[in-house]
Length: 127
Image: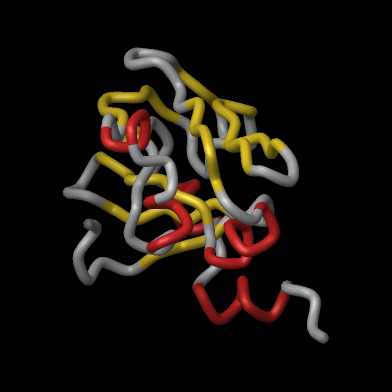
């Protein structure tokens, strides 16, 4: 669980939540999990891997499709949610609370480039 920290969102439907001053938890938005359907597998990035903002860093597979995970910030992966290996359905049960990996952010200014929840919701298709 993430706690009550503010979430920010990327245009590729990942959320980010500060976990301390230098770490960011990453998950997918409710919209993304609804689009995917029943999640059956999560390929998280490897510990120690480094990614730039917007780079593909994993995959989520559902009964309908597979979707790439993109890093919402630049940094090094310092933790992976091991529970998802055995219980990928946690993404469907509580997408806004279930983190996939944790990044040690290398460019804190990127946090300010992410959308607030209100801004993100305004980008979603309606109807």
